[in-house]
Image 1 (cartoon, rainbow, N blue to C red):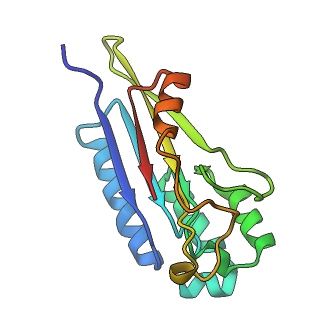
Image 2 (image 1 turned 90 degrees about the horizontal axis):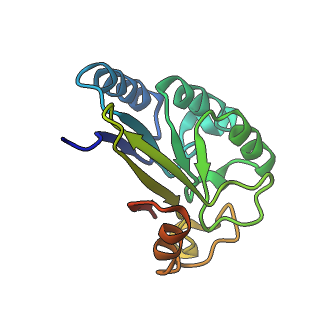
Image 3 (image 1 turned 30 degrees about the horizontal axis):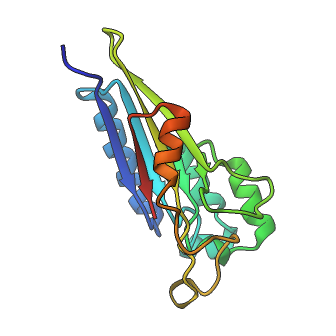
Length: 174
């Protein structure tokens, strides 16, 4: 008997609304054509900035589009500090996706360090998958960072998290 089917569509650095329209078409296609037991749509960084529109509306249009696309998980990127912190907090609250910040500290309200999803097929077999999102903290590449992020994710995190959550594996984006 085959195991559960998981489909992940992952994008990052979406700077124009035109790209989100194309992403929505892709997501709709895969949701209706040969659907998986679990379908995740992840945006791994730079979810509100830098786009021309975000410089005018502080990411409101990008978040509206992400919600329309059906993004399930998002990660802070090195450009989220391009908009004022108060506006970033508003965009986080408006986002329907789970925002992950494995090494993010100091953002209020705090964002989860990880998420655990379970994919199960109709026969009952299930697999748990852990998701983490790491913000790069390199001032030469980013200028600043929207958090107090350590330089790297401890190598022991996936092992510790797997033990604590009984996940088969962990997926990370840095």
